[in-house]
Image (cartoon, rainbow, N blue to C red; front, side, top):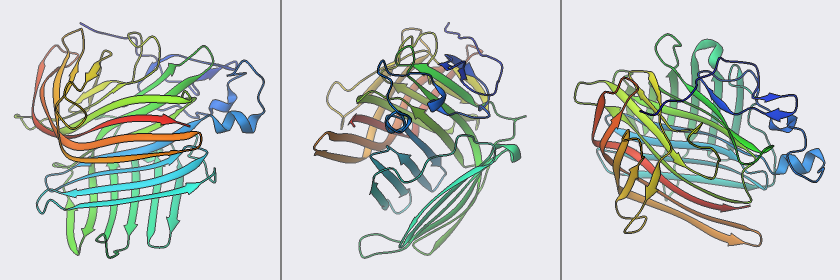
Length: 349
């Protein structure tokens, strides 16, 4: 059965100018990849190195009546905010995306007490990372237009350290270039108003996965993500985040994780295939027998453009996972029609 070393927490994933590689069970006090000494063979100035770092914070939330995905990203050549809300009862989808050229703000270097705001006419998105208080807070306000309904939300993750175990990893692309990821599954509380309909979130029925990602990603970046979360037949909360990307030594460390009732199980590297194309069934498997899933897209979205040196092909779908997972106690977790997301990204920037 697959296992990997879980290291003791420390201040930063960079030591004496070199990135550390590993898996930890808490966020670092600071993550600043610019502290890496000469990540490229040529001694680029600091501002040029900064432009090669991509970073984003993402939220995936599932309740009995809606599914939400939200993200703030800084790709340095542009910044992006996006929100997708799917009403399971009415089957309505709210889509919002804002892209701003050039590098205008940075995501926080720590999650213990920091915040970031993106706002413009008719839009407000605020994230308050507050691990000192065992929470992350999100405020969203999107005004109605002729093409979309209004949406307002105040959400709070319950990150009680006695109940849940997050995962932090630092993974190599090369000797001096790496990516950092912090992920956690937790219950949520809060309130939403969607098209005038007020929804109070029950923490016993609402789960969310939060991710904080930073990295010296390759100029041609390729990744496939699969994320599912909900409750099993015994009403136990569980969720997973599985990624296939370009990092090296993935058997030693990777960003794949399973949580059952807050307990973390690091998962082995996986292979994600789409035999009949991205709009048909995906197959997610490993060689250890711990991951055997299929993903069936239901609500697809596609973003694509090719301008000068930049190209994006991003396929995202809300859908269902089926199959099984094995946790660290060698217990089988049956996955039946579990809500989640599948994402396939090619980014040249």
